[in-house]
Length: 466
Image 1 (cartoon, helix red, strand yellow):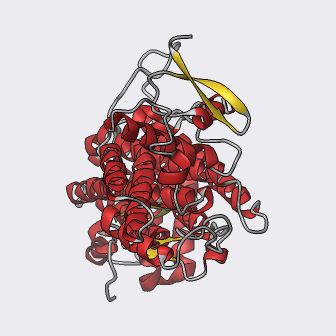
Image 2 (spheres, rainbow, N blue to C red):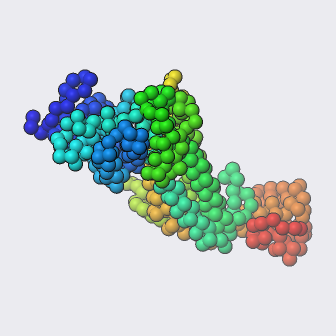
Image 3 (spheres, rainbow, N blue to C red):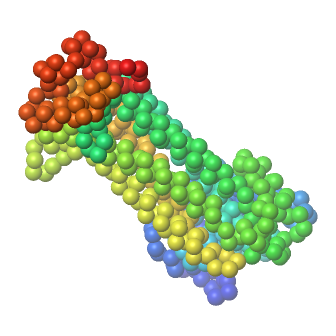
């Protein structure tokens, strides 16, 4: 038993690893919640968010005369260590747990307290000198510290996600420039439509993803409104007058985010609306990303019996039975990530709806779903960019052949010979296998010079006058 120390709480004594900085309540959570296997230590931005909150709270308590200077500086110093990436392995609580986040809040309180005790030359667990509850958690409740830490974590994670998104937008845009002169057929309902360039197609991929940068940032901005000082239900019980506003100000200074105190702390404490709308922005991004991956798989299909307009970088053999087969594995895996995002968004919806009265106890699964989505999307965006998009090449001859032999170019004749005659030409071309070009000349509908001008694919890529 020499490898353990005893700590006690409301329920009695419990053995805690002797070298652990966490304490008895964290140990109970370890024992109780073996659920997802994804631990708090998997999300460093969340841990930093907890440290931001605890440092801001300590600073506020010190400025209001509730915490002595030496203890404040010690707590702040430990929080800085955590912000800088230290002690993160001391956060072993499962992300999904009961208790509305109490286990995670106490995990932070205990780690900070025991590290302070170590700095003071005391033994871990000698909480009379620095208490997880009376000092680190002073003027707080899980119900304000925990959701505020979530928001601080999500603000950091959103910045990373946006950076990844900006990089893949640029990669698609570069391909748009590279393919600017590759004539191909556009398609609607998987049928030939009208000509376009492969560059226009890839520029559209860039443009549709670029739209979501502002959506993510705008929705993430809702996280800057916090309920610190609300304590249990928003009434501010056990927090001094002026604490909420001052703590928000300190948190803004420490975190670098424009944090403000919510105008109604009773409303803000159970409110999860900001999570819902941010999750919806990620779902929107995932919908677009999955559609792009569907398109990449279609455009690269073949190589002999598909569209085969582009080549994706070959990443691995595609079959255990079919020699020579190479599959579009990167778009496929990104599709699957997007499906996970859709499911997690539904989880967020149910968890947000499940709030009752003055608290939403489902914030653990809600926050985990959003953070998992960000983590997955960041990895998926990097994977798609690095292992697929930058290496895509065009099959120029295939694209041009399809344009020349497509019925779709008959659309360009509408303004000159009318819809009825254009339909007749298209029908005969389909039935006989003849080209639209030859049929128009055979019937003497237009001169060859005029027809060449009209049907030049480059003249069909933008608006023009007759």
